[in-house]
Length: 123
Image (cartoon, rainbow, N blue to C red; front, side, top):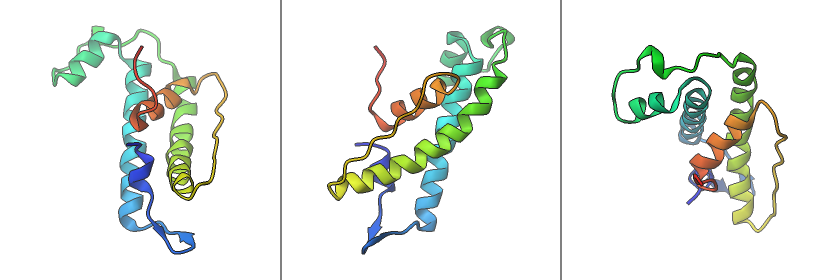
């Protein structure tokens, strides 16, 4: 079950965006950005601390701030969140759709989104 299928609410010949749909998209976008921040700023120990409800310590943070990577990611997660909704709806209608994201600073955004939608799993 992909995250996008929960965002697909076709109504007649058009795909309408309800307030509830917009709120779901916003939550999905925020979840992806949270995962991106974790990838960029936390060492493995920090991720374990966050997931287990422990307080972060200074040593849980990576020593280098990847600000260039962060600047790319929210835009990619925003686009991916909305495109994922369209892909899910079009797939339900039998339409093929392909989103291509290039390599580079946006990799954490693509990894977060594909993990949330269920198409990426850890090796």
